[in-house]
Structures are given as C-alpha cells and as structure tokens.
Image (cartoon, rainbow, N blue to C red):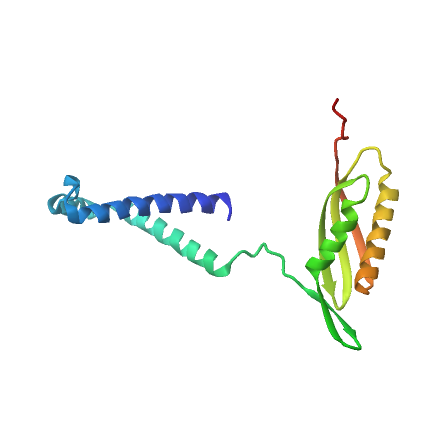
Length: 182
C-alpha cells in the first residue's frame, strides 16, 4: 500500500472513529450538541451547501478504492513457478523459490559480492537467473562476476538436474570497505 492510500485510510479511520463515538453516546444523551434540535439544525444548514456532497463523494471514492484493493490483493508478490523433472519413479516439481534459495546459498559465500537479490524465470523448462548486487571496491568485477556465474550454474545444475540457460549479473553499486575497529 503506498503512502497516499495509507493517508486516506488514516483519515477515513479517524472519521469512522468519531462517527462511532457519536453513535455510542447518542442514546445516553451525554452530548448536548447531539440533541434532536441541534441535529435538525445541522441538517437544515447542510441543505444547499454542496461542500458536504463533495466530502461525501470523496469518502465514497476512498471506500471504493479500498474495496478494490482488498479484492485485488497485492500484485507486487512474485508468482511462484515450477520446473518439472520426470524420473522413472514419477514427477518432481522444483519451485522458483527453491532455485532462489540455492542461488542465495552460493552468493552468500562468495567473497566480494554483497546484497544479492535473485530473480528466477522459468520459461518452457529453461532457467533464466538474474542477480543484482553490490561489490567491494577492491575486486575485479568481470572476473568475480564470471566466477559467480560459473559457481551458481554448477550448483543449480548439480542440485536440481536442470540446465541453466542464462545467468545475468547486474552490479548496482560499490560498497564501502569493511574496516576493523580496534
């Protein structure tokens, strides 16, 4: 949910809370402001004042937006796909999340590369892996990237038995060197 939706939701929630308190206290006649005469006067003053219609329309649109968001769900979640391996004993389904875990296992042990984010695409039984991360300033980027590609490919193919078609690496930043504090 983005910041605008959160702000609108907060305002709607506050208005709903005030309305709830009014409805709770109205039968007890605790608020003189809520007497029938005063409410009748308020409703009479609303006649012909179209600002109230605009406010009502805004709340209606906000509530429709939240209903649509709740029905549609979060589209940002990645869809889990599976690669199917057939054996003599049956079928093995390996999820893209499993592949991501295997890639992360290799990348986390790799020296000079940090904050690796992995994306796996499975198209027609072929694996396409994209890695995005940061490197330390003292490493050779082409050599390290090639070694990482080789290690990831070797590990995925040995663990899953699936051929890796392509491994793309995007280096997004150079990280600050780690200093030993004494």
